[in-house]
Image (cartoon, rainbow, N blue to C red):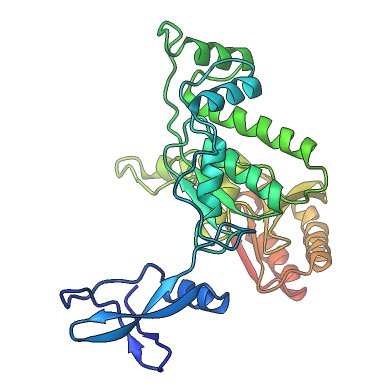
Length: 347
C-alpha cells in the first residue's frame, strides 16, 4: 500500500502524512491503476507548508448517477420492514432485528472498487442479509459479485422464548436446531424468489456450504509396539468416515482451485469420475478398480478430457488403494500420459 503515484507533472508522490511519517494509500497498486484507467482518480493541489503539492483524490459515484451519494439515507426502510420482509420470506418471525437488505445493497453500490465483480465477506452471517443483498443486487444489474458468509452453528433452545420460533422453524424443516440452518434456508428461498422474478438473469443465484473439519488424509501415527497392525490400518490413506465430496473439496484447496468451480460427474467403465473446472482436475475415488477395467477407464477419461479442452495443465487423481497391484496403476498412468495427461497422482 506504499508506492509512488505519478502526479500531473510526472513526479512521484508517496503517501507521506502531515507529520512526515510514512502512511499508506487506500488502494493497492493494482486497484489504483484500475481506478486511473476508469477515470476515478483526479489530482488537486493542496497546501503543504509554504507551498502547494499535488494530491490524488477518488471520485465516488452511485451507479447510474453523476453526483456523490448523499450521506443522509432517509429513503431506506428500517429494521421494522426488514423484519416483515424476512417473516414473509420464511413464513414466521424466526429472527429478531435483521438488517435491512436495502441498506446493505446501498453500501455495496457506493464502494469505489469495481462495481459488479467484487467479493463480500461477512464473518457474522446471522440470518444471511449480506448474502441476500449480494444476490439481489446481482439480479438487478446483471452483476457477478460473490460472497463468503460465516456463521457458527449456534444452538437454538425451544425453551427460550427468544429462540422458540427459530427452533420450531428448524424442526419443521427437519434440520438441526441451530442458527446456521436458518441462514441457509433463507438463501435457498431468496435464490428461488429472485430466479422467478428475474427469469432473464443468467447469473449464479446458488451457494455452497462448507464446514471446518480435519484433513481427510490419515496422519501417520505408528504404534511402535504393534507396527504390523499400524501398517495394515494405513493401507488406505483416506479416513473411512469421509465422503467423496469431502475429499474432492480438500483436493481443490490443496491445488489452489476455487471452491465454486463447476463439478461434473460421469460414469466411465462403471466408475464414477468427477471433472472439476472443465477438466482442470479429474478425480476418480472408486474403492476398487479391477485390472480388466484399467484400459477402458483410462481411454474414457482421456476422451472426456479432450472434449472439454481445458486451458493449461490438468491433474488426474485416483485412490491409491483402489488398484489390485502396482502393475494396474502403472498401466493406467501410462495410457493417460500417452494421451497428454502427464500429471497423474494417487491418494
